[in-house]
Image (cartoon, rainbow, N blue to C red; front, side):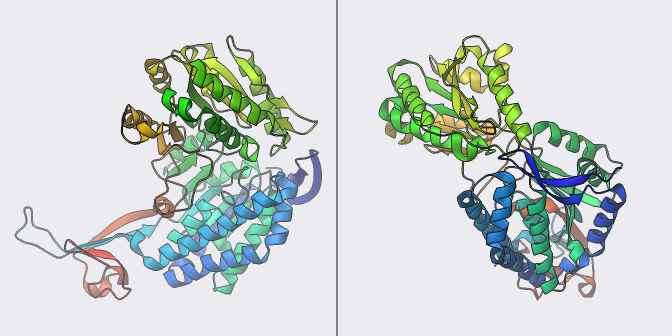
Length: 509
């Protein structure tokens, strides 16, 4: 493998800024994985692990100004957005530290022998252990929250798994800076630097997923790239779990009653959501089912006015810009598709937002309009105008899996009148998060959060945001008939670590 230089590129001009590193060779990937594998014991102590996570947040906050400056230079996402994202990242690291301290994620269950049961129950003790080295593939659109120190890394470290991160080519300099901050935090707590490895380059990503010491992988990116890695993970001599977030249309259903009640508010809210971050959110609403008739017309008018007021913006790189412009043009050329606000090239390096409208019946059956049911990454959404409920349901029945699905109801429908509950039931099989009278952009880091969904939204049933993301990097093991003196402290009767557990059928806290 040739060691090609890795450049930091300014997305505002497309020009190279500085050489950051070189692409990792197969030997360098192998070394990074072996270094991570060798230090997994350094994360065994939960107290040290939690302190490391908090220390990582502290290090990132201490370097905030330099990190935000570097991130903006490589992504053009802006200091305000990036400062908020860095704060979210630090909050997430500390939240996982709390989870590690609490210990409930270990799912400790102890059953003493019971000869009266049928069949008899022996002495059984079950908990969860870390899988091993986790490969993390950084996302382009969240250079902090879904990158080197993002949710995959934070949850894997919390589980006790070292990580090797494949840096995203859109922010290589920032990736190096964040990795250095994590390693400084590790050193403060006696953890070797190998606990967080970092490699650059396309071939390095392939070598990483194939490495026999990699035990699992987390990915956020395109359907094409994620599916290739997913297939590679499954084709290994020893297949490994691959938790990939690939793509999502995030459908929105607007009932006729909701449109009649607040068309203008829904139109302006939709404009804000679909243009947020120049439309580069994985939960951007990409397909909207809106009624025909006067209420639907008011909604489209409001959306037109609001989107027209949004200026052009810079996408993360010029490849994405080219794909967006081509994707918009291809969709706009389809029969019966109109462009109330034309999206496409803004200035030489920017894009302008817009939306398309199409009769919903064009999407109700397989045909040339199927392209409109595919995600277009950037500030574009498709508004499908439906005549009646059956037409809207026909479109929903054709949708693939999504991260989110949203319905906007009237006050009466939200109170239980009409088809509100039915629509929720129809949306639930489509997505991991179902919203009522809101917008999907914005994914709170909370215990009840679920950021995942049926394929192709994700390749597993897990979440990549929230406390339960830690479960991806653990596996259960049960000990049967093991003498107390040989058991790990987590499974001993006297509970020396004070863990929440289920003891002979009773939940103890």
